[in-house]
Length: 162
Image (cartoon, rainbow, N blue to C red):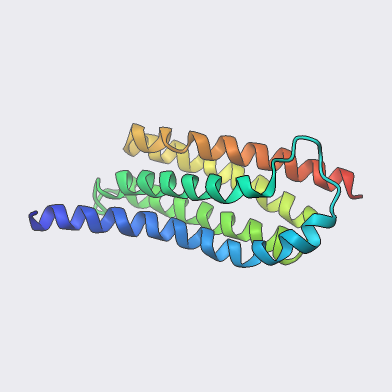
């Protein structure tokens, strides 16, 4: 394996690792609240069982990481790559912030505000990624679909627990 191949593998590992780290940080706020506070909330009938969330998010973070790698490998000397990666990092911070707002602060309304901002930022991320790498942008479709579902779920929880 040449230096270039090693560099690409490292970029891939870093990209996926950063996304998984964001998920891990979010889980530090989520895990303690699920069996306690979250269990007491009224939830809509379409709420998935709690065990579904971890594998879904782990898979989404892998896809996000691969997507980030596909953009990064185009080179940081490219202005659109830097911009796309910057937008990606903003949405990743918002992603983690949702767990902090919803589960950490135990605020369904704060969670709703953050998830709306996150959804918008994912759209911007997808658009900027598509301009650099079509596969990278398309790989974010499951992510925005899941966050759309999560936003509907979050909204329903807000309404049911007024």
